[in-house]
Amino acid sequence: MRSIVDFTQEDIKLPRKEILRSQGIPDEAELSENFEKTYREAIDLFRELVEPKGIMAGITISRFEEVFRGEELNEQENPVEEIYRKSNYLALFAVTLGPVLSEKVTELFDYGNYAIGYMLDSVSSYAADILTNTIAKLLQSKLAGTEPMPSTWLVLSYCPGYCGWHISGQKKLFEALHPEEIGITLNESCLMSPMKSVSGVLIGGPGEIHEFVNSYPFCNTCTTRTCIKRMQDLKQGQSHIHGG
Image (cartoon, rainbow, N blue to C red; front, side):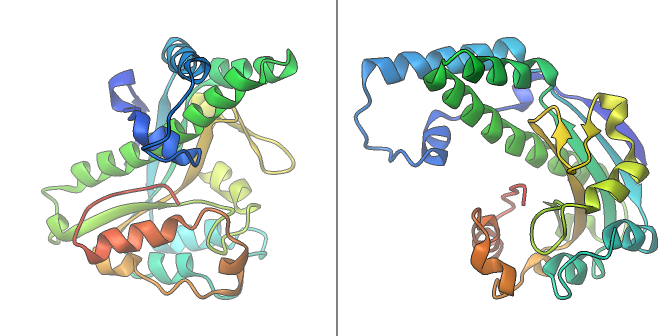
């Protein structure tokens, strides 16, 4: 299964509290009029400029093994390898918010409009995570009605650069998926353009395969720790999905 997804703006929910929390701003914080104005401008710019797209393609475990191996730079022990080998379904994916939005963020910083630039960048980063969640949910819904027992499955995303999967894994991933078809390219440092793009693998299977103890050596240097939230939700029996 290979498909291109043309998302709509309705697919990207932007709850104010969650966006502010992502910036470290507590719910009870009193915000200035200037801050409120900056926030509104950032949301308006985002809605005006965003061009969300996605692509995904099913892949076998044996084929993904080659993609995941990449340039042999992964951590020797990592949770992604343990999880995908237990999976029922795998799909490579990439999503992007489009080039115009990324160019606007760069332009704002270049011209010294740091407040609005930072806010638009923050909103866009949150939205990129939402788009990753959305494509995972889309795959989960497409698997519904197939066998075996997909209603018990959970689809979560895993990306190069996290959880022991070396960032150079982007090269093999791009060779297999060809996200250039939706305008995403990769430079020599394995960074994607447009900036607000995410790529990786969607892993589907029973929820428990996604649980692991985050005590790997690289966990100490991780700055996102999104796995903690995901596993808390798993243990509570929720189907919350967040890009990792």
